[in-house]
Length: 187
Image 1 (tube, rainbow, N blue to C red):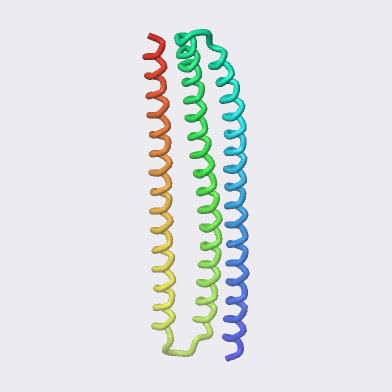
Image 2: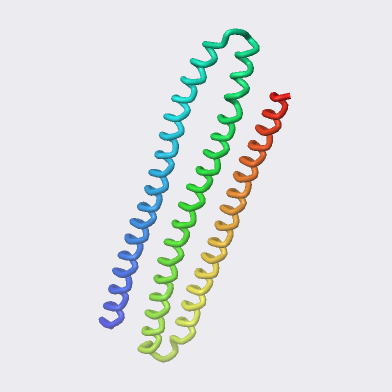
């Protein structure tokens, strides 16, 4: 009986270590994504502040209302283009971070499943007669959990793809609307 206890204890320890490693890896990937996001926002804020200051100085130097509106219109298109670029960059950060988190979780869960199945197979070799049905049910439960996780992962990937497509579509529409406004202002 101590053989089963030792196997179970070793498996539990390995599982706990794997979960800690997964948590550490997920936290690391999340912080990398947050770092990228903070860096993007700081650069965007700094750039926006500098450009707004320069634009304000030009607008205050306008000699008449016509020049004021011309300068104001000229400033709108680059601002819109930068907003579109920001949106695309933001979408890229979210997409790559989500992808890295999914890869890390999938690899870890596949390894844990492999170890659990190996442990069950080993236990089945030494199991007393008549326990085949219990072992079969346990294997079936593990298989069902794996299938459920795979479906969850598939759904999460699809949701992320839809979100990314929607963000990209919104950015494209914003870009097209900005181009129309710019063309209308030039007429």
